[in-house]
Structure formats: structure tokens, C-alpha cells
Image (tube, rainbow, N blue to C red; front, side, top):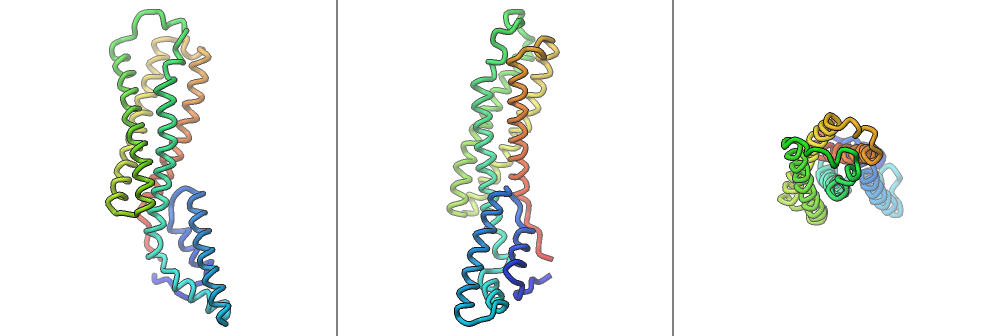
Length: 229
């Protein structure tokens, strides 16, 4: 359905809000900037002697249609969502790689027989997964910043690919980490009552909640905008 250019400022902002997907705060900031730009244009037309309705009509028409505005705004939302996801991922990866072994130090089973070779392999693989994820997070921060500044289609595509790689790496890390935790409890019943293990489980659960939320926003921000109507 063709958008009526006589729609006022609020109508255009509602249309943009309905077609944009991404982090709530960043989306609100973009819509606030759009509102200010539209209201400034309306005031300029009002000062020229036009009535409010006609001033809004001209301001909205001059500002651009939703079809023209959404791709640029959505790219900015996607870049912001990738930066948020990458920052959270990098922080969690650094903490897990540097402090993960602390949950086991001093435990009653740490001086016992060595775990099975499969367990040791999974543990080493998990560290490798987090190292790769941390590298992707650093790359995501760089590409997200460049894509937001320059808007190059190639940079946008690269940032999108890194974002999908990052979310995939997080999914693999979650599965591997869950498997390692379950295997640990199976090997050592005392792990469930070991205080550092309990604290670590709470911290990791909170971290995964934050990562899942950030990944959701990034995936939503990369949805293809739906057409008007």
C-alpha cells in the first residue's frame, strides 16, 4: 500500500518504528533524532506562514519515505547490535578463559586420578572455541564500527557474516560447556556442592542470559524489513 505523503509527523514515526528492528535504546535514539529533524522542518515551514497540517505534510515528504529511510536506519541498528553482542562476548570469553580453572582449584577431587581422555579433549576444545569466539568478537567490534561510519555494502556484508559466525560460535560454546559441566558432575558428585563451582555456575548463567539477549537483538536487527502496507 502506498504511504500517504499527507501523513503527519507522528504517522511517519509510527511507520518507521513498526518497520525497524533492533536494540530498544538505539532504536529509540534513532526515532528521537528523526522526530527532532521533522519538527525542525515543520517549524521552518510554520515560520514561512504555512498552517500546521501543510507544514507537516511538506516536512514528511521532504524527509523521505519509509522505504527510503528504513534501509539506512536498519543498517545502523544492525551495526549497533553487533557491537553490543561483540562487547559482551569478548568480556565473557576473557573471563571464562582466564578464570575457568579457578572453580576447580583446591577441590577434593583435583588430586585424584586423571579424568578420561575424552573429558580432557572436550575441555581443551572448549578453550579453543572460546579463543575463536573472542577473535570473532574483536573482528565484529571493528567491522561494526566501520560499517556504521562508512556504510559500505561490502563492510555491511562482512559484518553480517561475522555476526552469524559469532552467534554460531556461541551456540557451539554453550553446547560444549553444558556437556563439560554435566560430565564433571557425573565424574565428581562433590562438584555440585563445591562453593567455587556454585558461584561459577551462577556467574556463567547470568553471562549466558546477557549473551542470549544480545544475540536475539542482533538476529532481529538483521531481519529483512517488511514492506509497507
